[in-house]
Every structure is written in C-alpha cells, then in structure tokens.
Length: 259
Image (cartoon, rainbow, N blue to C red; front, side, top):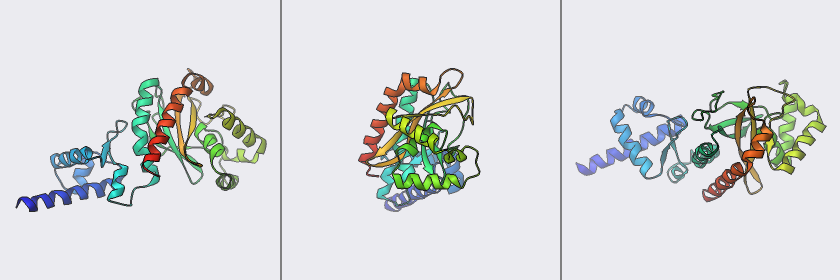
C-alpha cells in the first residue's frame, strides 16, 4: 500500500507540473480548482517541488512557476521562461537596492513585451502595467536597445515589419537619420533611454541595457522612473553601475543553463 501511495503522490506531482506548464504560472487556488486536489495537498506538493528546485514562487505576483530544471522532465519550457526564471530574483534584488521598479522585456513579432517586473512591489510605481504590456520599438528604452544590439539580419527584418505598420510610433522607422542616431548613441553609451520627443506615456521615463548571450540579444533589463521626479538620463547617471552589475550577473546565470 505504501508503494502504491508513493506512486499516486508522484503522479499528482506530475499533474501539478503539467498544469503549471499549461498556465505559465498559477497560485494554489488555481491549481486546486484545475486539478481537483485539495489546497492543502497542492500546498504540500509545491513545497516539495520548490525544495528540489523544479518550482519557484515569484515575489512580484505570488504565483508559482516552473524552473529551468524541468528541462530534465519536459521539453515544453520556452526560452523566455528560462530567462524569467533566472532573472526574477535578480530583478527583485536590484529593486531592493535602488527602490525604483525594474523590468525585463523580450522581443515578440513587432515590439518589446514585458516579461517580468517589480512594479507591483516598488513604492515608486505609478503605472502598474502587467506582464504582457507592449513597448514600441522606436521610442521605448527597451526597443531602442534591442534594435541597437540585435544582429544585422534580424534588425532589417524588424525594420521591414515596422515599415508596414500603421502605428504612429512605428512610422518613425521611415526617418533613417533618427534610427541611425539613436542606435549610434545607444551603442556608444552601452544603454538606452526613452525618447522624450515622441511621448506615448508622459508619466514615466526609463533606462535599459541589453541581456546578451554571446552574439545574441535575449532581451533587456531596465529601470523605470517617475518622469516628474527623474529623467532617463538621470537614472543612467545614478544607477547605471548597479544596473550593469545586475545585467552581468544575469548573463552569467543564463550561461549556466545553456540557453
């Protein structure tokens, strides 16, 4: 009977792992409802899975997520999730150091998208945008950094997509001098800041640096400030050293999991 009970327990854990993979993050209540297991049983399983490193709980949203160790069990773990897995603790640590909200963004289709953020826990947040928020390529700090550091062939593909867009900010792609200038400045400075000439959200300003793995850019890590209190350039002047330290730490962790 004990052996049978052990097998059933293992099966239930795999059910929870499968649900987490499908949900891309869930809390105890979500998992209990979807699995039919009691909240107490789900809590016990999550404690065990966390102990062995297969699951972690994000401070930013209180949900449980799979970690890169699940690659040993499943191939259903996306590149962005690996990045988020190692980045979240680093974002939280950076936010505690500087207090301002910190973001992780990656490129999808025609824009940068927020993949993880500490905006919910920072006392300096004034716009609680959620994971999945879209940032325009031409004017956001994260978009300008990505375009400046991605490979030439990828950049041309992105610019071609933007040329076919009807979005007012994407249309800035038709100003070659504008694009050339911000990419040259970004590479020279090794960071990007939001363009203040073309404002899509006047309440905040931002600073971003690339997350790189060899010649590849995987996304950006950045800091968000309240525009009336601090500019993107002032964020760079005060916090670039700490942001670069977080970037370097993140890139070392990414190398360990061999993305």
